[in-house]
Length: 116
Image (cartoon, rainbow, N blue to C red; front, top):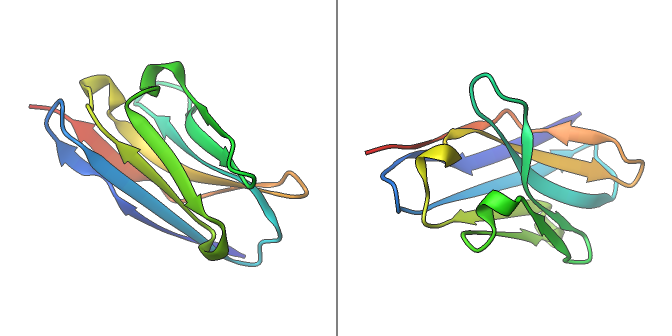
């Protein structure tokens, strides 16, 4: 069984910043990728940002230059710093982890609301 400890999220005004963190623990093997996904009401879950064990990153075009993903491999923790937030960034943000067998695990999600 895999457990996730997610923190961060909340309500912020447009142009503001928020940080998310997610620590994975439990019966999980070698983690090859960690990432953040978001889902707005009525929409599919989409990739926001991902980071591989070697440090390479991938971002959705809509967040490039505004969001930064990082990870602490020793702690199986991934972070997402979100700056210059826009109303369209609103959604439930989920931590996702992929192990060496390419099995995916998901956190419970945390809500981010960008509104004035």
